[in-house]
Amino acid sequence: MFAYFVRRLLYVLPVAIGVSIICFLLVHIAPGDPLTAIMPVDATAEEQAAMRSAYGLDKPLPVQYAIWIGKAATGDLGKSIATGRPVANEVFAAVKNSLLLAFAASIIAFPIGLFLGFVAGYFRDTIFDRIVTGFAITGVSVPNYWLGIVLVIIFSVNLSWLPSMGAGPGGSGEWAWDYAHIRHLILPAVTLAVVPIGIVARTVRALVGDIFSMDFVQALYAKGMRHSDVLKHVIRNAAPTALSVMGLQLGYLLGGSILIETVFNWPGSGFLLSNAIFQRDLPLLQGTILVLALFFVFMNLIVDVAQAAIDPRIKRS
Amino acid sequence: MTVAAEPIITEEVKQKSPGYWAGVMKRFMRDPVAVGCAVIILLLILSAIFAPYLGLNDPYKASMIKRLKPIGFPGFPLGTDEQGRDMLARLIYGGRLTLFVGLTPVVLAFFIGSSLGLIAGYVGGWVNTVIMRTVDIFFAFPSVLLAIAISSALGAGIVNSLVSLTIVFIPPIARVAESATASVRSLDYIDAARATGGNALTIVRVHVIGNVLGPIFVYATSLTSVCMILAAGLSFLGIGVRPPEPEWGLMLNTLRTAIYVNPWIAALPGLMIFITSLCLNLLSDGLRSAMNVKD
Image (cartoon, rainbow over all chains, first blue to last red; front, side, top):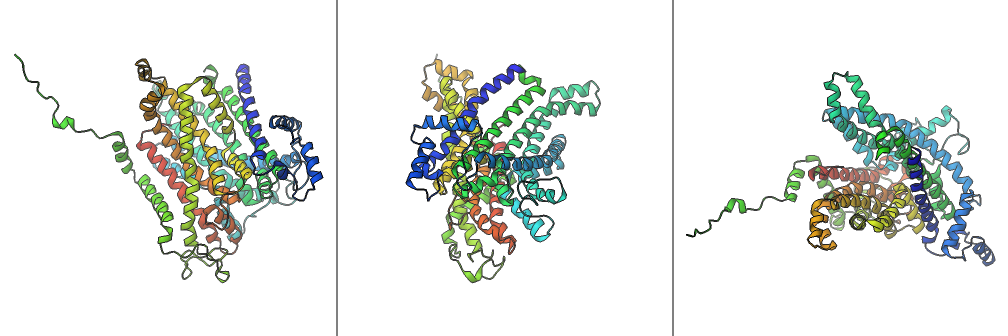
């Protein structure tokens, strides 16, 4: 197990470095001088020269990268052009809100997806299966930013049941688990949950259907095992794959909530990112993308290690 | 005594047996859902191409007094948008850019990704390592994040959207192509072809491509729906197609402010994205079962 963990870690490190190189290069593929991208438009020539040497923009690219990644490793992601505040602080506060939204969405999505997928796989080729399959493909096909707008039209504009934007009283900083705040979480979390429901249901359906047609299930029935005990075996077989799909989805939820956060003005990393895009605030953009992408890489690592921990077949291969 | 050799091949046998693609076509036509979706997609593409000949109103002509008219307003079957422009015309014209930007990246990524995957899978060794580890790095980003990152760095515009979405879809296609190629390469007939002196290019062309292209193609079609949603999403965020061009994601964005005035008009462009992406997914599923491709 430990050896596997080390092997995975050694594999993840170069990927993480590669990810950071891409984030670093984002500022340099932007059209024009990177200096104009990281400075206010009204900066004087002296300020520009000071900035150029401060950022090391007169040095070759690999050196610049080394300086940048060295600072990033100590938590210094530069300063936002729009607000002048350190990017790291802004990203940290926003990621906290995004995680909250992603967790809320997964609490809705995973039980529903697992249940639907299991029922459809168990009752393969019945009307149940058809309904779930149809629902799942609709779920993965829907542009969720549009679904968010439709839900706002129904529940905020027409019915006036739920708020259409923001994270409740106190704005972005003060989240509390009370009615006033949770009301704001419902619509974005439901919207964000639809795609993972579809993906989890589809995966689990195929998985459970395949396992039921395996020889060992026949053998268990043949030796007279009770139906409920056979189900336990099937679930135990399906668990590692189902868990890894859900783990990956949690990572996708964090990265994929950008559009949903924009629709609902949810003060998370996606909202921060779309503001950074709107204001062409490249240091903020770069920092947010780096943190989100590294989180996704980290999530993948955890999923792989957790999967190896519960599935003895992986360690052998 | 010599006997004239009797022709043992009768006319019946000589007739060519129906090929693989005829079988695929036959199975596909028996799937009413997939055929229905293919018809809808075809209609959307045709109406987008021939939009100027459909006798529609001018999609750019604004009118201050006719803003946000409801569905069924005289002269405007689907109402008007926030600048008084005809929604029906804008939705049909909007299909041009939306479908173009939504589908082209998958086509480009299909060619680039399968080439990379074929090279990596067939050549193996350090070539494989270089290609696939680079692919892994891009794969480490969630697709939405990567598309937004590249698009926002490059800035808005159709070409930039095409570039960023193509980059997003090369890695998954390259991975599928690499694993398909690697598994075909280990089969005996490839060894046989090498042993008889065939050079690599010929072997790949004659023996490998035919066996891997089907699965890669089906996989690529399954990405078209995501690509559509992403492409419209970039415009929705303001880093895709620039106004005033009609494009469904961009229209959805500008009409968002109108949800308190005329909500169902605001929902129409998104409905178009949804219908297209649903049909693309169902079509891809139909192709997958018609071509007998396993996951």
